[in-house]
Length: 412
Image (cartoon, rainbow, N blue to C red; front, side, top):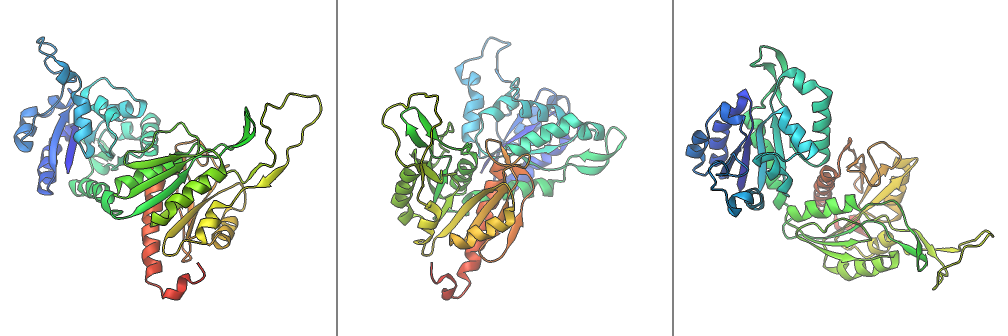
């Protein structure tokens, strides 16, 4: 794998030299990007000699001598496109703040914004800087975006203080690298059907019924599955999100359109995850022209939409079928009832009234209720992280179900 190692300006920068060697021993190609402050602690020549590759530290190489060109101006894009993982070790408080706030004033911070692959950061700093609310807020922001943080260790620091702030040990950093990179391939050979976003039910040509779903959770699942090697078909209601790289998107508007699209792609799938927040009801007799405003009250007659999850679960065969439950009360009870009633293999449930969960936010707090009786509550984390945990649990559950006697899935 191709790893870009970001080295920032702290005393622990010297430890990154050994990290380059260890990464190479694991079979990775390493290119080092240094900040200007990092060069005060260790020279680029050291990393060039160890990595055998050019070390980048300036956003516009050759600018001071008048030799800057288009290649140097867009080099951060080229590096971002060819790297499989961005690892920053050590990561200073300044770098955490830049990444969290989208500040791009050097090569490393600009590279981060241009990267679409996984990011790991191993912070190292003074204990008071680590514990400062601003740093902790920046860490929370980065975690919510899916950045893997390798927590610093505790001990005697270079400043003379004792406490958390030491760069994590190399074994811990290497373990994080291995987990992130290996996770990308465990869905090879799988075909995932994922639904996402809201559906819209027309009242007239200018008005419609819908819900607050942004589609972020379903899109995060599609992106995670594609990165883990699966073929992904994403059936999406109207959203402003871009289709994840590696996924095929089928756009729909209404619940009935979503059902038809799902029925088209379901036979070729090995796993189906129904994350869309479909409208349960539609207008029975929508108007073909705009309904004019009137002083009198207006009554809309609604009729139930098809139940996509229940419909497809009846035909699942050996496929794994996963549904979602957005609740405002009695979450666990309602989720377990839905698991049984819909003939699903897993229900991902959350209380949408909880802070940091639900619609149109970047984090979620869910519990995974599985067919084999396991309930897995997850703490607040980014939707990208939730997506990974759902896929992890799906693979575990399928293995558990396949180990059961064939009668276990009788009646599916």
